[in-house]
Image (cartoon, rainbow, N blue to C red):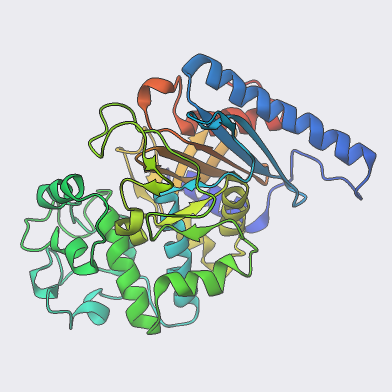
Length: 391
């Protein structure tokens, strides 16, 4: 596996030869090529929708020449029968962790953080820190790779979400889930995915900068990279957000996650565990920027994948690096992230051997409406774009 990580690090830094050939200059041929690629993408999405039955989806690809192609299928709103549009915005769930990872990596390149700094250096003065499991041994790298040994939200917190889904949560309430608990593993021992690792990472970043992490992400990443359709999901009413559907067994009020234009479950509590609404186009362009070293100092790219640890809970052979999954795919090793929030599912991956990023978003999280995972759909879209049959 070490050779796999070395290979993907080299590919990310050097940009392997592309498979989709860029046009020399915009013209009728390039427009025709774009139309053909869009039809391939639409065919993949419509095929999965016909076999599964999800209400709607968007997909986008950022091509090697910098073009972004996007398609939409199905319905954005079941009740009004409003069609899905390519600029329909959905909650991106844990994909948002990649923004906080990139912020931390920028701070590393500026000397404000070091990956192997003890977390205590930044958060040790917090009144709750002495009650944090593994607190004396935690490092920034462990938070980013989910190897802190810390658990997730506890039963008390989850019961509170079900009872009062619309209420805002303080950061102290989020951290409270961890305090005085027995760690799941020793610090640095193994991968245990938890949103709370990234809650702590964001607190570290804020201590290092003296500024709000979300504001720094907007200033350093969203604006410079022109991600205009990406916004913090820090309130129950988000402009441009389409309704999401979570299935009848969803504990937060049933299938429809939006009523009267408001989300039933206030996403504000997610914060650094996810915390963004976006479009497939923005997500594809973002993941290309992340994996090509345009979101932080590209000299850190070997650390991003070289820090990757075995992550069997994600999938067979999967690894988790500094904010991203590293996985084998039919198109070679790919890097990216998936995301879930009740009513919404997202996935975005970059294929370095092809200089191609692909994203997909669905306005449902009801498993019964999928014939394949979002991760598989992304691979199918990528295979269609490079002219290979999907498996």
